[in-house]
Amino acid sequence: QVQLVESGGGSVQAGGSLRLSCEDSGRTSDKYTTGWFRQAPGKEREFVAAITWGGGRSYYGDSVKGRFAISRDNAKNTVFLQMNSLKPDDTAVYYCATDPRGPYYFPSSYQYWGQGTQVTVSS
Image 1 (cartoon, one colour):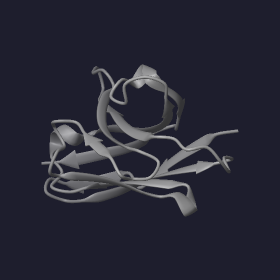
Image 2 (cartoon, helix red, strand yellow; image 1 turned 90 degrees about the horizontal axis):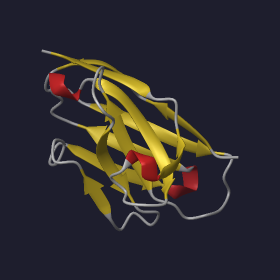
Image 3 (tube, helix red, strand yellow; image 1 turned 180 degrees about the horizontal axis):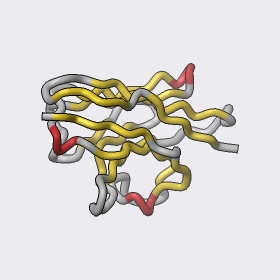
């Protein structure tokens, strides 16, 4: 049974950094793309980044390009999101998701979701 657990969220000042982790427990096989999304109050869930199983391809939303970096350690079943130069607009609940059956940038493509971790950036 796939279970995704995010961690690493918190509160930082603008310009600071955070590193989010997404651990996929309960899975011992399969190759899957993992994505990060975020959702701020009153807004739709937004694509942040995605990475293929082998790590050879990664994708980013326009608002985070050049500031965020996604990576993975398959030996630990963990995907990371390094977030640098954080802005107040980055404040949201961040979710990881796996097994997209459609375009990686559509939330509805993903089969499994974590519970989310809060990121708050103050000015």
